[in-house]
Amino acid sequence: MEYHTNSCPCCNNKHESDDLFCNGCGFPLKGTQQEQDFFYSERNAKEIDLSDLNNNVESARKSLYWIAGLSVISFFVGYFTAKNEQDKFAILFTSVILIGAFLAFGVWSKTKPTAAMISGLSLYVIIHVINAIVDPVTIFSGIILKVIIIVYLIKGIRSVLEVDKLKKELNIN
Image (cartoon, rainbow, N blue to C red; front, side, top):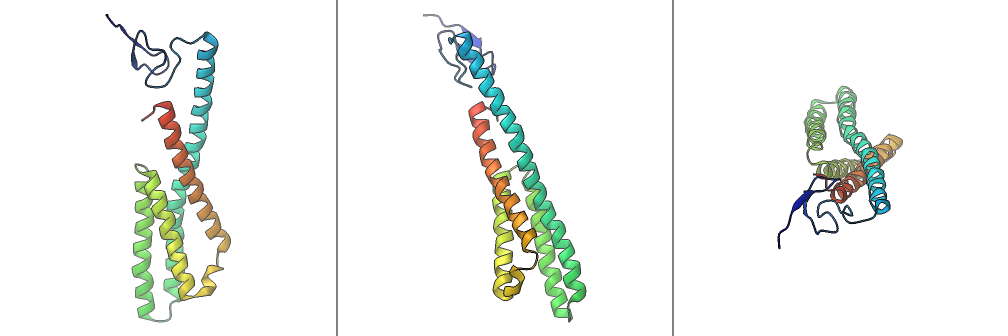
C-alpha cells in the first residue's frame, strides 16, 4: 500500500493521505466544511486568548523590574535615615542583593517566565515575612503597594501557565 504525504492546511505538518486528523494540531482533515470552519474559529479564539495572556505575562514581568526600582528607593530612604554606620552597611548589603536579584528575575523571565515569576514572588513574600518578624509594624507600611505587587505576580504566574497550556494545544513552541 502506498501512502502519500500532504501538508495540513492549518499548521503545515505532514500527514498521511488516510489520516482523519492532523497529528500536529488536530485539524479535521476528513471533516466537513462546517467542522473545519469550527476548528478555525476555535483556534482563532485561542490565539486571541494567547495574545491577551501574553500581555498579562509582560505586565507581571515588568512588576519584577518595579520591585527592583522600589528597592532602590527603599535603599536611599533607609540608608540616609540610618543612625549608624553598621545599619548603613546592612542596608547597603541587603539592598544590592535584592535589587540584583529582582533585576535578574526580570531578565530571566524572558526565557523562563514561570520559574522567574515564582522565584520573584517567593523572594518578595519571604522578605516581607522576615521584616514582619523583625518589626511587626512593617507589615502595614505600604500594604496597598505590597498587595498590588503580589497580585500582579500571581496573575502573571497564572497567565504563564495558561500560555503554556494554550501553546501546547495550538502546537506552538
